[in-house]
Length: 137
Image (tube, rainbow, N blue to C red):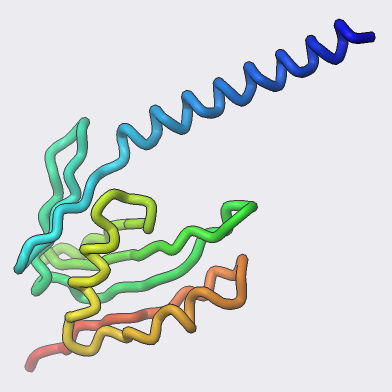
């Protein structure tokens, strides 16, 4: 009986170690965010960086993803490059997220009341447009 318990604990420990290794490998490949005065960059280990001038941002959506035990605050940043529209998915776990959010909140018309619109109720997506660039012309 003790051998079964020990075997079960060993199996659980191996599963946990494998899960931790996968998590560590995943976070090594996540981009880092570098925020500058007029732009931000997503810097990757495995591909060229993506640079987005703040003036090219057309819309920002904020929402949460349910991760079983907690919620992950996320952004979709829509931006124009030439005549094409792109979207970047950014989440609060990326290195440099706080500095980027602080800079985004300075965009004219950015809805800084986003926390009360996004955070509660828990485990609901609460997708909200927090910024839309003024259309010129």
